[in-house]
Each structure stands twice: as C-alpha cells, then as structure tokens.
Length: 83
Picture 1 (spheres, helix red, strand yellow):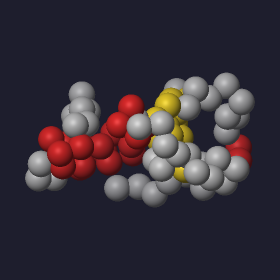
Picture 2 (cartoon, helix red, strand yellow):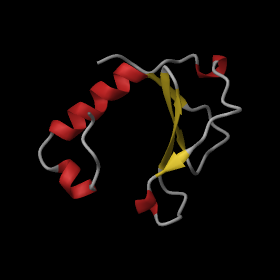
Picture 3 (tube, helix red, strand yellow):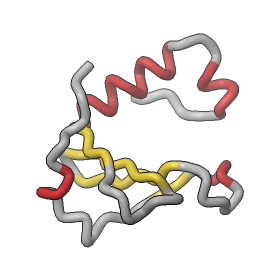
C-alpha cells in the first residue's frame, strides 16, 4: 500500500466539501473527509488548522478494501464496503 501524498499544500482545498460520520454525534472527535476528484483528503475535526492527509483515490480504495476485509470491523462500525 502506498503512503499519503505529502504535498497537501499544493492542493486547493477552498472548495472542499468536508463530511464526517453521522455516528460522531455532532462531537468533534472524528476525522472529516473531502472528495477532490483524483484525491481523497482527510483531516482531524479537532485540529482543522493542521495540514490534512491527501491520498490518491486508488490508495484510499485499497485501504478501505483492507479494512472491510478484516474480521467483522465493518459490521461493528456500520460502514459500507467499497464498491
């Protein structure tokens, strides 16, 4: 699996539509995700001033597939398996 793109400062986040899990209960104790075409960007909802992690879409799909394949974590977390 590849590593996150360290060049997050080169990506324009001004039009990012940040989403967080509805399971967070409105608290700022989770990560937020934004879909930026070829990239998926992840940030800490408690520290929005910190640089986000930028992943190539294929890397994020690989990560989600690995999470979904590991035991029953998706059932426990109520997440959707990647398509």
